[in-house]
Image (tube, rainbow, N blue to C red):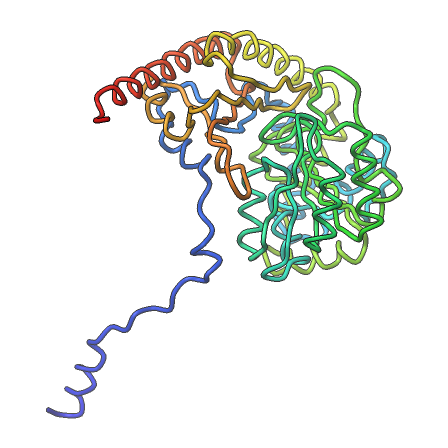
Length: 420
């Protein structure tokens, strides 16, 4: 065999590729996204997604803002921008934050590509593999993914129908030495509950006394239907220098803009800016300029009030239909705002096992198990009440009730047939 033939034979042997990173292998995908893919048929009434109602988008106002940007500053709109974000947009966000009780300068703000990116940036800036992160039980699913990809050890803080128990939080901080606490204290995803002011003050006090970062995620807080606004944890004295406040236009303007932001102390904000430079350089310039123009030309608060009014009617429709849809002994939350409602079926219902039968009735929900860090509560489920009209919600709950009853009858029949 010639040298050339030897070389050809050697190259014909294909060596295996190096494996994926351990964090990529160990972190699963989003069950919510998986369910949405399975239930994409138009006849399905989908309570699974966290999707704002598209018919309530201010499409005319947003389109006009884009036109104004392209008419006035087309070159700037299509050019690279600074990592920190457009100065006009940052100033507008700072003004809105200050008006809601938390004095903020434009320099306190980092614009992100959706608030989900803010979680990834914070994980990069704060967490080493093996660090401990505390979360609510249950917790926003994509936060669990972000912390999992960072190699963090995620521990749930015990709580009740009002949310985190500050006493249990302090015990875990002393025992586990976590880097941060992640919380969605207002109209939480997935439960819809709101942490009362007294508990917020207690959480802030624990963070100040014990040395703990707080990541306060607030994508839903402006969607209040009833009750009084509760101050941000970031506004309490003990937490001012150690709380990162996350915000988003996804639920109040449009998710397709992919515009979020974080407000953080200077050193951490600078670290997140460096992480963002490595991730995507900056959030799309044209979207930032359009959002800034929209805020200048329109009354976003009036738009939010209209959306919240529609969402309240949809929440009420879901609350009215749940007693007939869910089995006797079920419980559920009554959110004062936001997008989600959390239900728990009686034992021995398993909402993951029940879902395929329910989907056959052209309706869908998200099982509660994936929202738990640690041992899951398999009898729980999340329902989004904002995407459908009240009439569609009523029909969806009728289908849900039929699906659950069919699944229960099938289970009982199978048990009777099984050998003793």
